[in-house]
Image 1 (cartoon, rainbow, N blue to C red):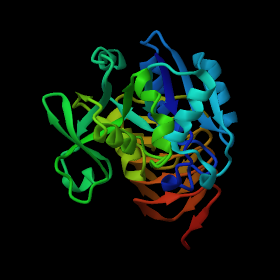
Image 2: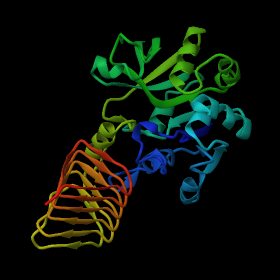
Image 3: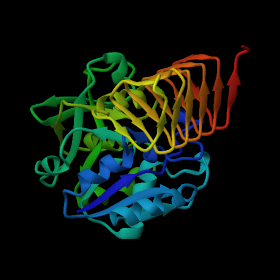
Length: 331
């Protein structure tokens, strides 16, 4: 079996913070999304590959070296050129050959053990499924109906979901199914693996579900990103920082090296403050602040602020601010 982590998308729904940085490398607590995934794959005794694009290739070189995994590069630089997930899977097959494949979306955070997941893999397509508990939310995903652990219905992004049980971004495909990728791509949707699974089911392939219930996050929006932070940030990680005696830290938080917490500031709970940030007389909670950003006399709640911004005299709620922005209100 080969393990293939799909990280070739351009994450346009999270622009501008992902315009120059791959989504898989966004921090969630004291780790990046890709770290959580690679720590789980380390339990397996299989070769691991990360599929990405030419534009983000340089970002993943150090990751590949750190974890001893290989990169597969699709020759694209822009969103309109991308191969899509299934196109990228075919690209991987052409480069590293046919085999059983464990395919993992590089923007997914999930609670289960991959070793336990693969214990259910017996030459049939196996998908991880999770109950999102909301029919409106289910419309965004591939909706599954089960009889026992057998998938009897699969519909990608339905207008009227028949259940709240959805397919997540973890799939195990036997080699004989991987041989069908070229046939599927003659007419099939290149981007979403769910359409491929739907196509397999329609042609009579047996598909088995692995149910789990602790947590799952598809990091496709600011809300899901912040919710993942709240779930996975369980302990504080504070590096070498400067902090005023009048400031307060409410755990759990991550505050990276070189940050300065000045004046009467309150950081947390559920805050990530990047390297070299300056926070002065400001309250930050449920938010992610990337490196070298300066925030003065402001309140930040459920917001994501990219690197090297300057925010002064503002109250920001549920906001997404791109890098190098300068925003202020008069004194």
